Length: 181
Image 1 (tube, rainbow, N blue to C red):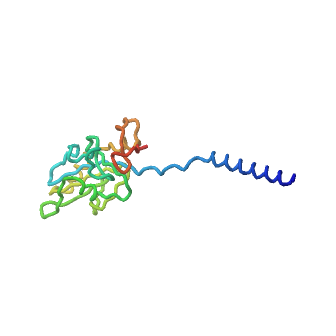
Image 2 (image 1 turned 30 degrees about the vertical axis):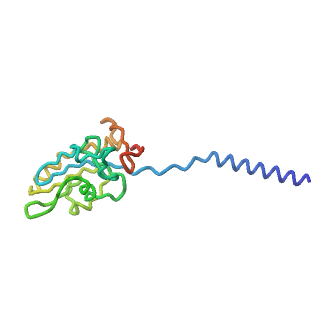
Image 3 (image 1 turned 180 degrees about the horizontal axis):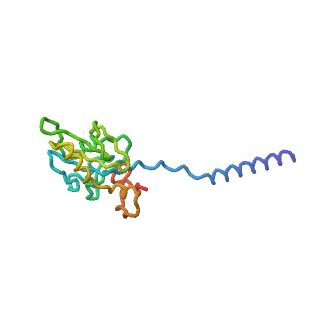
């Protein structure tokens, strides 16, 4: 009988230690939401598109694409909320027509280098991109690239000395509660 009581007490002690250890283990956290930013400028038919205009901006009431968009009236910073998003998907969410013909070619410059597969380009955090549709020379296009901003670092919290971005409601869509870190 004494042996049964000892075994019972040892079993309870082991169970208590196990329960305590389990309670001390940090809870599994949700994976961080994918959220990167790139600076972008788009020309269509040799004309700069003002991407800060409402028709190019996602809002909580009118989301153009939950995974790739512009918002907060800032037409310079492209927000990407899922891996594998292409420039083609982003452009197709906007009211822009970029058909190539004998007078208009599509040229993409990313971080100062021409990209030969424009619509399949997948951005990385802090990229600077110029999408040009028109008849300008390569030299003119490269000069225009120099006007692309470098504000994405503010939204990605990589240059705090330059300020803080507005609070973002992001993470797969404007209406969710994720916040970029």
